[in-house]
Image (cartoon, rainbow, N blue to C red; front, side):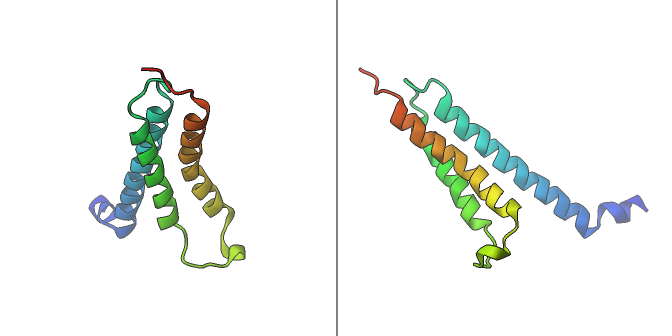
Length: 102
């Protein structure tokens, strides 16, 4: 009985959804870490910007195909804004952090 439950399609789609969510959370955390850790002297800021751009691409890629602004639920807007936050942080880090004198 449990084997049939484990092999059902809903179970695998749930696992795949959790895996995708874990990947996005890891990318999000890495982007913020690379952008905010040692802001003045970090050599990893470009990698953080690249990850932030990847997150924005994921946001555009997961946007629904319907182009009606009334047709989207609030969650779609929130998810897209959530994925754009690291890019906004990147622009703030580059704008506010003074250039290091080497």
